[in-house]
Length: 449
Image (tube, rainbow, N blue to C red; front, side, top):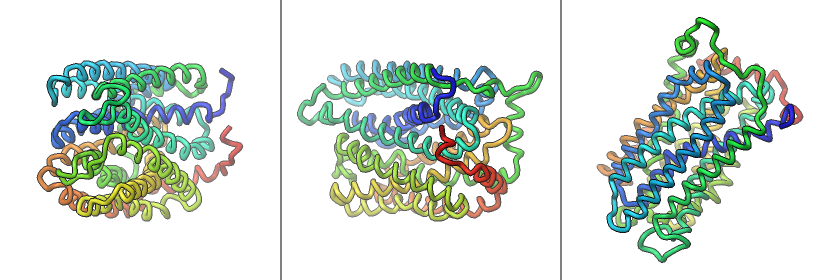
């Protein structure tokens, strides 16, 4: 490893590996269970619990801040993530054997859910360590420059996981038990997917052990005799405008939370159930091709617009764009468009999410400053996870009560809460102060090296 490798050598790979477990655990798990025939309310409720580690990670983020280095924490978490995916590969191999005799294997459902939950705790720890390392390894100008880059690769991981990887998994077995045999027997294709993920994380951990620099500031944040936990929480929850910050974090993504579990089910379930009837392969191809390009374009556009016009000028149009997909799905539920229109609307959804979530990432970064940056960032994202967890757990029951059309009408109405909380951001002084500090560095391309 050279003394000062360019952040380009590790920031993209760090954030790709940070984003991948999140989408596998929270979204691909839904596709897996739907492909295996479990009920919507069962899938949404129990996979909704998988947000819990991201909600609670604020409780052990001070441990990451106060013990060892962020570099060691993230390397350990990446290695543990490889082990979790290897476990899930083994469970799916066992289920593929058992599935030949009985569908809806509840023993597999329970065991795999615990496997996903273990992965969620590891992934939440990886989030803390990676975000903390980013704040320590990069200078303030580099942080401003790479905020867009890291978001792009985080989002790329999510599209890769829910798109390309799912499409490849479906193609291996022709995406279901009733279709002609593919390269492997269904559902053994899911085992191969998790095995691939285990190897990918093992390789990533080895690469980062070699390439990651060791920042001088990367060490325990605690001072001798000081209670790191109490101090980190105190400084976060006593900052100015904390009530406005909390309300915004909880409500900004409400519409997104109501869609996250139900949309994959809506796209994959049969037309006889009022859904779209896509195959796993078609679902993944739309997500992984058009969706991939759209999310990159959205992130790039969001980063450019935020850099040029600032957070407060962008947040209103970004919020409107964020809630539009809720209305797209009302149309899709009642009109059942063809594959081309469906692909177009999903592409627009990804572009809008890429654009709007850039603003949310910047907001979290702006309110996570001071001595305990890592803990404050983890607290903010933990609160965000709580805002995602509760609606997603309820979504399956509501959908089965209302049908897809009625549910999407309800989700669209509730998503208007996003617009209601935007005025609160104009009262948070730390946003303007931090943005001025970042702009004061006059970041250039050469500063990224």
